[in-house]
Length: 152
Image 1 (cartoon, rainbow, N blue to C red):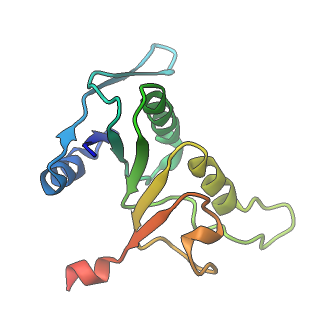
Image 2: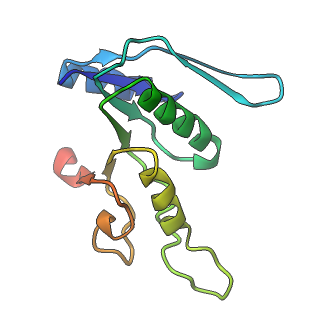
């Protein structure tokens, strides 16, 4: 199955690496903001029937999440067969327990949210403090890559 790789802003080098390794094409989008700050996204590539990969490191996630959500939903509307998120840094893994009354367990909320609009996640060394695997909170398949193997 053909793959097409999309980038959220700042992930262009990662997209280049993924496309070269997979022999995939780089997806083209138009992303900008309206004067009121709302996000505009348009996919310029033919994606029907292809597997879409979105490269998006999720540091500073609050500013990136809506673009990721909108792009993923649009790709599905445009009939991609699958949306895979490649997130070298996966956010909201830290707060995995309620330490004080009234605290949000944001790792669970974020996992449910991402699992609702991507079909698979690939990440590097997520912060699994009190969890044994990603499957404890994510309902989509997750592949974890360990950087120590790649560095050594």
